[in-house]
Image 1 (spheres, rainbow, N blue to C red):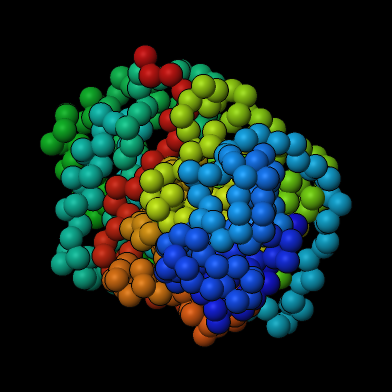
Image 2: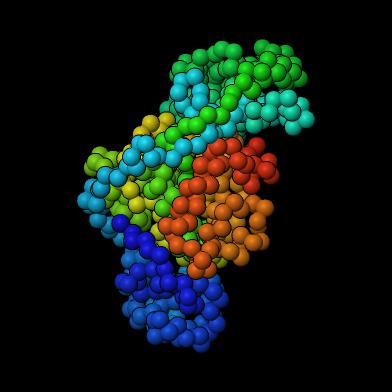
Length: 515
C-alpha cells in the first residue's frame, strides 16, 4: 500500500517518504537554492510540482517517489538535479501483486451514528441526489431531436416545477455503423439503460431514428426496460420526421412534469451515496493534496456504508499491485489484472496512448513525467480501504464500499460509465484546472493548489491547496470534503451546475469497429 501521511510543508520542498530519492518542489525553486532538510543545493531552476534528486542515482536505477518506482534514470544523476522527462525513462517492470496480503475489513461506524443527507427516494428504494427528466438518443441520427426537445424547457418554462433540476439530453456519436452484436453494442446499451434507470432520473424518453443498428426494441428487451408513464419511446421514421418527433417529445415531457415534480427530499442514510472518482488536468501536487484528501473522504464514506468508484484503468497502471494487495479475495484482484492485461495486450498494442507511457502536455507541465507517476496520485482517490469488487464499464455497481470500474482515462467517457453504473455524485480533482460537469450527477471540483483555485474560483468547489500551504492536514481536508459531499447530495449546487455544464458530456466508450 502507498503510505500517505501529512507532510512538513514549511520549506521549499516536500518529502513524501523516507525511502524516496527525490523530493517535490513546493514553490518555484531557483538554481542554487539550498534545501536544508535534504542537505542539497538545487542545480537547476525547478518549477512548482517538479522533482529534485536528493541522492546520487546511477544510470538505470529506479526513481523512487512515495516509495514506489516511477521511472528509471537515463544517465548518472547527481544530487540537486531536476528530474523529469529529459533524464527519466519509462520502462516496464515486474510487480508483486501479493493478492489479499494487506486486506483489512472496514471498521464501520455504528449504524445509529452514521451520517445522513436529504435525498430523493424512488419507488424501488433507491435514492437520488438530483431530479432530472432525461431524453436519450439511441443513435447519433436522433441526437438533434433529443437536444432540441430538451432546450425547449428553459428555466422560465420550468419555474412552476421547482423540484425538477432540468430536462437534459443524452446524445452520443454512435448507435449505427457499428457491430450489431458483442461487447461494443452491449456496452452502449447497458450505458443507456444505466442512465434510463438512474436514481437521479424522474422520467426518461428514448428517441431513435428507426433504421439504426441500436434498435429501441432490442435495447428495451435486452436491458429489461419497461415502457410506462415515466418511460416513453419515439421513432422518428414512425413519428413523421424531425419536427414532429421534437414536438411529440415536448408534449410527452409536459405530461411527465407534474408527477416528476411531485417529490420531496427526505433524510436518508449516507449509505445511499455513490461517488464516481475522477481526476483530470493533474499535476504533481495531485498526489500530495487533493487525491489523498479525497481518498480520506472516501474512507469516511465507506465507513458510513457508502460507495467509492475508482476508475480510469490507464491511470492506475504501474500501481495496480497496491490495489490487488487490498482485494477482498484473489478473484477480485485477478479481475483487476485481467482488465490491465486487456488494455496492454489487446486494446492499445502499438498505440501512442497514456497507458503505454506518455501523459498529456498539461500533466507534463504540472510535473508528471509519465503514467507511472500519474498513476501514483490517481490511485489515491479511492482511499486506503479494501477493494471489494471490479466492474466492467457501465455495469451496475451493486456492492457497497471501495470498488473499481474499468474505464478509459478520458474524463467524460469515464464519468459516463460511472454514472451508468449508479454513481449519484462525481468528485473530480484537478491541478491544471479541468472544467467539467456531468448531468444527472453533480460534479464536485477539487483543486490541488491555491494559485489555480484562486485563478479559477468560478469553476472550483474546494481548495485542497491549503494542505500544501500548511493550513490543513489530509485528514482534516478529508472531513471537509465528506461534509461537502453530504451538502451537495442534499441539493446544494456545485459550481459546474451553476455554470450549466453537463449538457454535452454524455460520452459512452466507443471500443468497437465503425464500419
